[in-house]
Image (cartoon, rainbow, N blue to C red; front, side, top):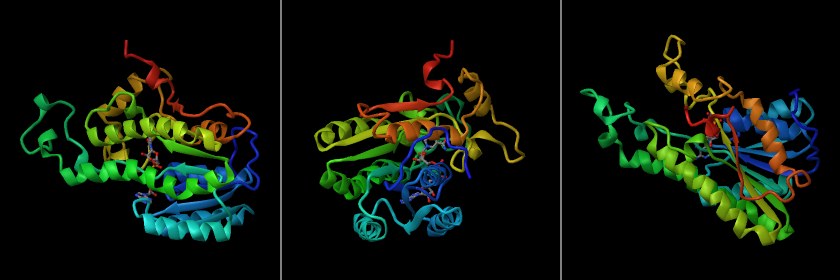
Length: 281
Ligand code: NAD
């Protein structure tokens, strides 16, 4: 059993979480299940969400795992129909699937430091850039098209997107991921406005620096020692530490709670140990 950050009751709410086979959204899915929700855990990685659902069920919570590609509208419609049958209409949608790709990442922070054989800005692959924009932006838009229909029908619901620190100011090496997450923050405001009259709130969290599958190689060398990038991150973080994944849950619960956040829509909440607040001087 997890130690939940807020005493929030999501009993009976159907919470759809994409990317629930991953580190952060798997934890969010579990937390919602423990807080009483009926959770639909969606991911490309079917084994991961089935395992998550089994773990939740073993604790007495309600969670079903579904294989779903957030980039395939027809597959999403099929999963939606299954979720309706198994759990009911969606009350809360967490658009968690996302990430970067090495094909859209440069080896160097600065062009003038590029060495022979390294991948520079000029070597970025268009299909890698497309992949990252598609996964993060379309991968948020398409599930919202499918699951927010339930919310419009009920004139009630909540959408939570996952932005990032790089949405405020781009991080070196990852131009596509930074641009795509900036688009997510922008889209969060668009959705908040578009659905305001339909009883649907839409917000985002912007997690700071966590150690996870997608960035482990940028943060630690193969022998486990920190990279120079890690030293820079910590020097730019007033609290001088990484954020732990369970520290996202308080913000997630707060923004998804109809009572606590009843008038909050269109915000992007940084959960970053102060990174976005610090100029570096
Ligand atoms: P993760 O790689 O552990 O999880 C991502 C999950 O998304 C994986 O299980 C993967 O199978 C799934 N996925 C990928 N493509 C998919 C697709 N087309 N359809 C369905 N599922 C797909 O990553 P994470 O660190 O848990 O990140 C979760 C979210 O948080 C992402 O949107 C990420 O961009 C964002 N984020 C992460 C960090 C961080 O430091 N980890 C920081 C800021 C934002």
